Image (cartoon, rainbow, N blue to C red; front, side):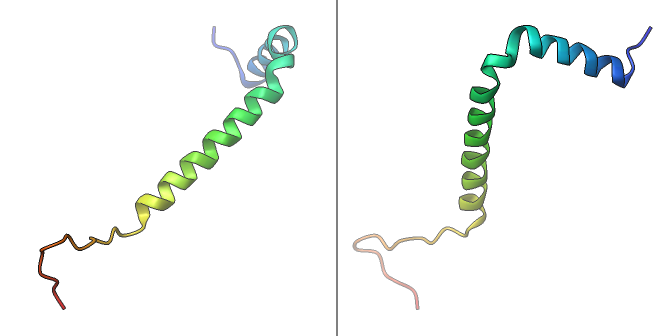
Amino acid sequence: MRLQGWEWIIILAIILLLWGAPKLPGLAKSMAQSMRIFKKEISTEAQPKVKEPVEGEKQQD
């Protein structure tokens, strides 16, 4: 016997009401912060890295 979609929703709602309701705001805040960090890391990796000249090394024009 497999659970259907609406049965999963009912089970998750019961779990949320019994266990997780007080923790929900903190969970949402931490997920948003994680997404911001993830987007920042993705955008910095997408930019090409420029090689900085090292002292004593010839620069190419």
